[in-house]
Length: 299
Length: 321
Image 1 (spheres, each protein chain N blue to C red):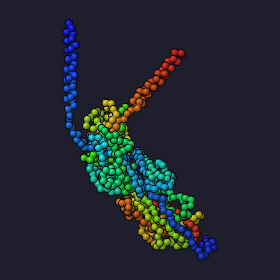
Image 2 (image 1 turned 45 degrees about the vertical axis):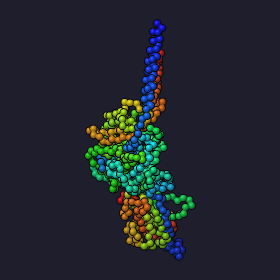
Image 3 (image 1 turned 135 degrees about the vertical axis):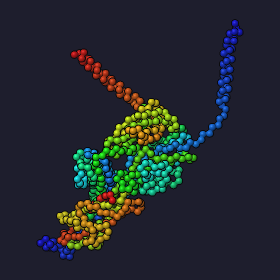
Image 4 (image 1 turned 120 degrees about the vertical axis):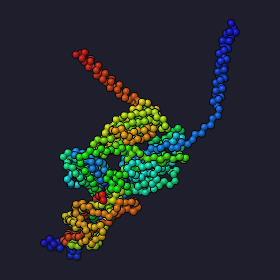
């Protein structure tokens, strides 16, 4: 019956034509994800792991609609992303950040787990006047692979990713930023730091500070810590060399790093701001005390 | 009495004149000519800060700049420094020995140098205008910024990298004052390049005009997937039904293969579930001869399908090989 209706609707010559036209348009431009794999084999029950990945486009010449989802697996509920669902990557954005958070339940059985975060871009929306009213659009996407191992052993391991000697002003003590990645599942990191200050030629030692205690980095996190070294000499404007040493709990040397830093002129506030602040709050306190004393006398 | 008073005045005067004479003598001694030669001090060991210690995320199909800041010192004065060269290279887990001299290639070695060095291959090293500048005179240190143009094929070294997970990228910098050189690496840092799984799909997916009940036979429409990241990839392929409201052609009417195929013998049938298809393309090693994978497509039009212009979307998702 249906075939009969069709044949009456369409002229016999064209009997049969379905126009599938179709030239398709090229895909938007490339698309990718970096890094494309998160490998973590030291998780334990209750571990929380966060990683930043980037959605990459080489030629982001249009806003790109995309969808972020977690594939259905037995650990889908462990995984969340920020953002999630439908997003728009603005035109001109070559690297769009996406946070992936993995929360291992406290009752999770030990084992190997695999999961995937999928990002699918929409095909280009046709602009007015653009050629081609139909066709098979090509959409691009990328997938992040999560390879997780949940065990019960203690893993203590960290890496010093970066050491950066900061420029300071006359009113400050030498400062060093240290980036540490905790690769283990318990808090970890160097225990102590020492600092040697040298003149601008790096050949005469001017000061030495040791025994600066450092905070441990939480499991699976990368953190930057600023270490301040309260040296016994005031620094005048100029160039200096600093040598920082980091030590483990057992006193063994982990890393030694020497770099030049500059001391610049301090502003009035840099020099006396602290005292002004103390003075200001001291005065307020004094006024409050006087106020209450007077009230009490009147009473 | 008068003579005694004269003697009282005279004595200090004589002592004063004698002292002055002695002083003049000393001054004259000071003006004796001296001859000191100040020798050349070798540039101090430079310090190297590569990308602030952060991992480098590449951009697919193109390049991404990363910078190394080289702090150079010279006790003869920073203005004597006349050349800086830096090499960023794939290295073992700890910063490599100073003096590494890799040859430039887009996978594993990038060279950046100041213009005083003949024919720098890529990028350049320039005295900073915003950081520690050389003010001349007794100023002994200066910063140079060396730019590296990292192409999308630079080897990934993060923990999930397929080959180089236990490696890092290191910068080795050499400075010169024209008479002596000094070399160092970014020993305080562990810098990674992240793996990048990316693809681009070009070409046309053109089935032309077909009659209901027919198929494309051995006439394929071909799409070409190009690997635009730094690792080998496969692709998951899926697609939607094609529609021409209110009519639909099921996505399963499309078949495809990684080699040319007659419709009936194409290996894979399209559906809505992303399914991994093995690509023969390997990790890219050159930006001029990219790794590609052709995918051949065919379609069959069910008998009785209404005429019209049908549209749909086929999706290629880059996945690790």
